[in-house]
Image 1 (cartoon, rainbow, N blue to C red):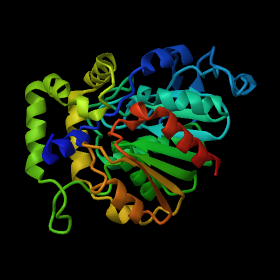
Image 2: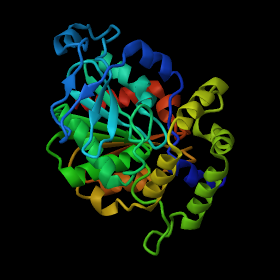
Image 3: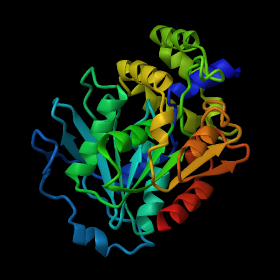
Image 4: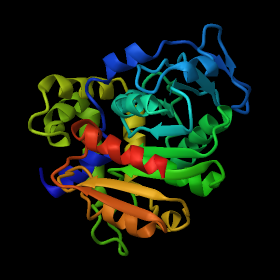
Length: 335
C-alpha cells in the first residue's frame, strides 16, 4: 500500500476488534435511558444494575454490566453507551466508522481490574441515531461532554483510537480539563494530516477527495481491498469480516463527513494546551497513520506526553496487541 492510500486508510478510521460482538453480548443487555434536553439527569429504566451490585462483583470474575442506555442530545440525537464495572471511570472513544463494540477487549479486562468502563457510539454509528448532521469536531466533542456530564463522571481517564483522539483533544480545549485526570491516545490521527505550506509532510487534499469519491461508488469493495494491512498476517479472515460488517453498519454520510473532519482539522495548537498526563501508543507498521506523521509529533506537542512505540504493530493494535496494550493502559491508569 503506498503512502497516499495508507493515509487515506486511516482517515476512514477503520479500527475494530474482532471477537467483541460475543463478548459484548455476554457482558451487556439492552435497555434505554431518558434524559432532559440539556443532556443531564438520565432516568434509567427498571432492571438496570445498581452501583452496589456492580461493586459486589469480584475483580477476577466476569464483571456484571449495567444495562445499555441512551443519552439524548439537545438536537434530538440519541447516543448509545455501554457501562461496565465499578470504580474510577475510564471512557473510551472509538474511531470513525466503528462503534463502541470495538473496545470490548480493553473494556472487559479493565472492568475486571476494578474500573468503571464506559464507551459510546458516535452519532451515525452503531446503535446511536443517524441525525444526518453534526460530524464536525465541535459537535462530536459536545457529544462526549454530554456523556461525561450526564453520568457525572470525574477523575476520568479518556482513551481514544484514531479519530477518537481528535475528539478527546477538542473536548479538552472546548470544555476544559476539570473532569479529566489523564488521556491515552492509541494510534492517533493527530496532529494534522493535510499537506499545507506549514505542514509539508502531510497528504494532498486531492488524495482524500479521490478516496471519498471511491467510497461513494463502492464502499464495501474498498473495505475488502484495504482491510488486511490494518491487522497482522495471522489475523483470521473471520475477524476481518467482522470488522467490515461493523463498518458497514455505519451511516455512509457519517463515514464521509468524519473523513473530512479527520483529514482537514489542525490540532497542533490545541495539543499544546492539554496539561494532563498523556500516553501515546503507536506501531511502527501503522500504514493507516504513519507514526512519523501522527504519533511522534503528537507526543512532542503534548506538555506531558509519553510515547510508547510497538515495533511492527499495525493500526489495529487494540486487536492485534491486546495483552501488551491492556497492560500499558492498566499501568497508566494506576499512576
